[in-house]
Length: 129
Ligand SMILES: *[C@@H]1O[C@H](CO)[C@@H](O)[C@H](O)[C@H]1NC(C)=O
Image 1 (cartoon, rainbow, N blue to C red):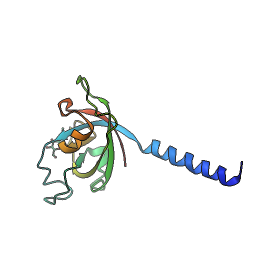
Image 2: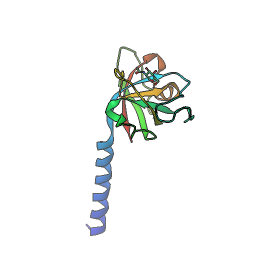
Image 3: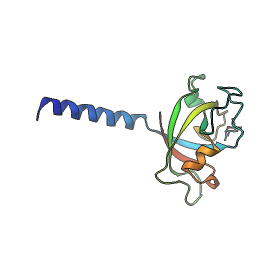
Image 4: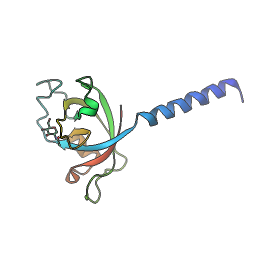
């Protein structure tokens, strides 16, 4: 095998591993509009695909403006079909989810609706930055 091919394969492998490492899991809940004011941006409207994060991710406001790609991976309660399979949504962090936050991500209702059934209320998600 040529050296270029080996290098290419190494790069591919590293990229794959990095993606896996960055995918974290936790519970997500949601909140209803209006999505302002927010702890990060005050009254500035950051759109509908926004989220609050709990203290694990908040990092003293450093999380503000960060984007997470989120997908539903399962139920967190008894709801029968909580996930919208194959869907993911990208949200911008605009808020702090006060303890006791019921999840690691507190998604806007609009974002939650994309990946899960609203009736489930709370779902397990995988998120990557
Ligand atoms: C989600 O965020 C909203 C707005 O900041 C807040 O009012 C609500 O209590 C949060 N939900 C949970 C479960 O912490």
